[in-house]
Image 1 (cartoon, rainbow, N blue to C red):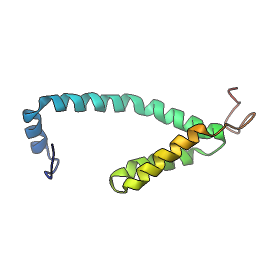
Image 2: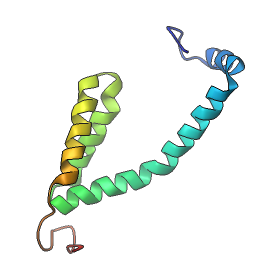
Image 3: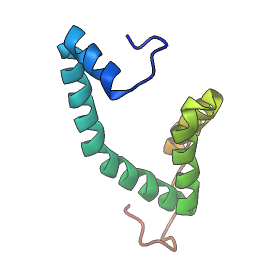
Image 4: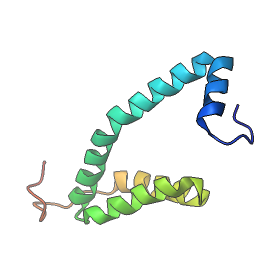
Length: 102
């Protein structure tokens, strides 16, 4: 839809006139992202703490996702790393971040 046109307010307005449904879909998607980002970050930080790692590791994952437009392989690596971390077992017993939930 955008082609090689720069994303200026004038071009966004022209695109909205051509296809108003895309504006509605984009607004709904933006609202979903805005509502889901804080729970996602909370889960990510709790998970790395459950493994016993620092929250800075989660920040690295987030950074790898944020630079996906400039370095596409970084997004793939970050996504795979987060998927692998989801399957790591938590530390047995209490961690320095709090008691074990089990």
